[in-house]
Image (cartoon, rainbow, N blue to C red; front, side, top):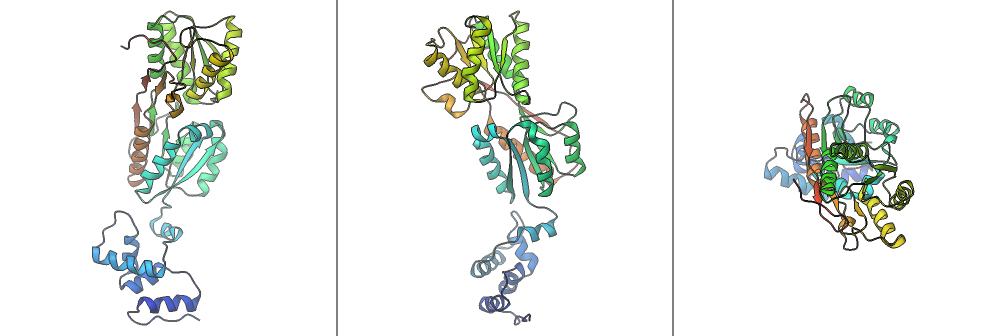
Amino acid sequence: MTHTPPHNPSIADVKQLIHSEARRVTSYDVASAAGVSQSAVSRCFKPGASVSKATYARVMQAATELDYTPNAAARSLITRRSNLIAVVLSDIVTLHYPQILSELSRQFGQQGMRVLLFSLAREGDIGATLADIWQHQVDGAVLAATLSAPQAAEFERRRIPFVLFNRTLREGAVNAVVCDQVQGARLLVSRLAAAGHKRFAMIDGPHDSAIAQDRKRGVTARLAELGLAAPLIVSGDYDYASGGRGLREIIAGLGGLPDAVMCGNDLMAIGCLDTARHELGLDVPGQLSVTGFDGMAPAGWLSYNLTTLRQPVQTMTLAASAMLTGLICSSGACPERRVFSAAVVEGATARLGPGA
């Protein structure tokens, strides 16, 4: 049996009614106790909504005393938004750039939205993850994974805006925030060549990593322009073991040491560096220059002080969240691509010539 609350009930009256009906507190209960409309209660819990200070104070007092928590699912039925953002990161990105997820969570949280993390063992696993994203009816997505043209089209068909993070779609224009990997690689090659390095090798990243392919393309193109021999390239998996294994493969393939080993990321460079110094007894950078990519925190530790390229990750993350928020609020905007530059970190593991 449902009890009818008294006219202008007190908070105690509303509590008694809820208890007698053995149910959860609703926004209508808060509205009744605060003496306001249910829509006023909704506005009080919506970031940026217009509501007077007096109304807000009454609603918050009633909500606190009734122990009310807004129902996100119910609110989504009204607003037609889930206030959920899908963030798709590969395991390597999640492990070495936790600030990406942290910053995205903070930025979207300020807009009243929450992040759902979808983690990929490898970038190529994105196809199997899309079905999970559709099920959660997210309002948008930030993807640090490569999409195919049909996958991008499916986002468009479902009217789910997305921003690619440090990835691009070669078959068409999409919203993306990227660091210029090719230009960064070219810059590092130029600095190494200016210091007299002539024989280069590279420990490449995974074949399904668009970033790895861009970095490799930049290295090989710049060496060709300088009239230097193409680098010996060996495969790596962006992990520590790949660095040591890659260096041994390079030495075996060349029958000796190269002048410089350019590693596809910092973790492989650290593995290469440890193997060179502690297993092979090499003088780095006297006998061999070792460089990385990314600028992850351990690269700057005193025992490594790695020469590398640092990506402006925090700036890029802020740009991605701002771009996606704008897309959610206003549809129909032309695709935008924001490009950022990497900076050379002049560590102690490579001999570098002057910059341009």
